[in-house]
Image (cartoon, rainbow, N blue to C red; front, side, top):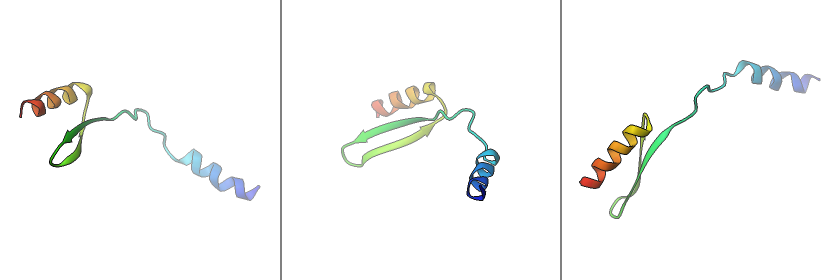
Length: 55
């Protein structure tokens, strides 16, 4: 019984994530390999992707 008590208490004490969605812009560059940039939402990802294409 004691070996189950600690994991049970730990599971109850740890907070759960309410919103675990993250967005990443992944760029494939021939000279630098793959680069990823964390963005706040899908709209920002689209805008940054368009800017990267124009460079």
